[in-house]
Amino acid sequence: MKKVTKFWLFLILATVVYGIGQALIQTGILNAFYSNMLILMMINIILAVSLHLVIGITGQFSIGHAGFLAVGAYVSAIITMKFELPFVLAIVIGGIVAALAGLLVGIPTLRLRGDYLAIATLGFGEIIRIVFLNIEYVGGAAGMMVNNMTTWTSAFVCLVITILVISNFTNSRHGRACIAIRENEIAADAMGINTTFYKVAAFAIGSFFAGIAGGLFSHNFYIIQPTNFGFLKSFDILIFVVLGGLGSLSGSVIAAILLTIISTYLQQYPETRMIIYSVVLVVVMIYRPQGLMGTREITDFFGKKKNAKGGI
Amino acid sequence: MGALLQVKNAGIQFGGLRAVSGFNMELNQGELVGLIGPNGAGKTTSFNLLTGVYVPTEGDILFNGKRLNGLAPYQVTRNGISRTFQNIRLFSELSVLDNVKVAYHSLAKHSILSSIFRLPSHFSEERVMEEKSLEFLKIFQLDTYKDEKAKNLPYGQQRRLEIARALAAGPKLLLLDEPAAGMNPQETNELMELIAFIRKQFDLTILLIEHDMALVMGICERIYVLDHGQLIAAGSPEEIRNHPKVIEAYLGEEVPSDHA
Image (cartoon, rainbow over all chains, first blue to last red):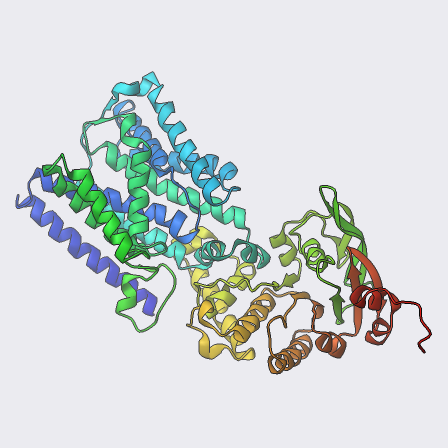
């Protein structure tokens, strides 16, 4: 019963947040600049939560996440611009193709551990970017023109689905298996868990939602270019997850919100922007080395039951 | 009736090093057998051979008549062999309850999609897992700690939890790798009682590695002795205690003299 009420609470909260956002945008209190920031925030949260599943829950240190963002962005852009199919379909197909790319990359690389996995995923992320750079069909280095179709509504709906799916996955025997792999892979194996299967599954689900974020991302600006998806973008996403606290879903959401706001405001000071941003990161890591939330969830502060997993 | 576990001439070579060779062992249903030997004799290596962590480079391992060579560790566990580790390997950030639930993982069948969409099979199976895990914790008197993180348990309780977790995977054969390591005499006694209890309660066959001779001689019905990767003796505790090769392995070669 408790879980069911939690689910409805989450939906009500989501509806309220959506309603406030929609009202502010409709009435023009938030101008185009700020509504764009809100959409970007939603995209960043989706990216953070999808990488949280791979790094925070399964413990596989992947730093090529922007590669899957690129796959989703380009595939969905091709579908709306070249085939002129509906936006919703484009987002879903973008996610599916990104998940397939995740399977393709994950099956060989997830045999590696720690630093080796990080380097391999970094390499794959760059390979994906270079592939798009060299395909004339999507404009090569000049980029591809994309219509602006992403709205507050579509971004928010995608975000809610992402959080629900990933938190449902985490709070099940499958999520426990992934956390067991993070905690001790040898013991997880000895307890009858097919570790390769779960590592690849978590990686593919994470890639799927990165692809969804890609679809929203490409239709939010008028152009996408391979340079948007370099390894610095991967590090941006990684920072959300680490800063929020490895293993905390709500932590990565909060970190994504805060950092999006900070980096948007800092655009007024282009010369010092990266310096201030970096100082913020350094300060947080000095005073909260475990991340903003540690491994806790925001729900832990309300209920009496303490839970070490990743709830909503 | 054939033996539950048959190890025929198994061995493993790492490059030029023969860690274990010509290892023969037979375990019958319901036995409690010890595996001893000096440090570096290959005891843990032979456990790793049995559980699929290493693939034997020679010989055969048969469990219930089924060949286990080349199966991955998780497949070996699903076939009914479960183990604990010399250095405790709990899922330290997970709660005590969740540690046991992880072991139940392969007994549930609901798919990833069922969990994502919260289908009825998810709820019913998760409930069964929860109930069964709680039952286990009760048997091991760990239920008061169920929401505690595993890493916060005292050492002795961590050992208990590791055994509970291994049992929750539903094994027919339980392998214990130095369960009494780091325990004081009182804890060792409790452990001996616990082992005797679970053996009866779960109808288990148990193979254990141990350095604590009081424990080994006290509860094992048969003992195998390894030295330098070779099986040097096998038999009842009495036979092992007086076996010249065992004494040699542990104490060094006997100097010929005129003692009785």
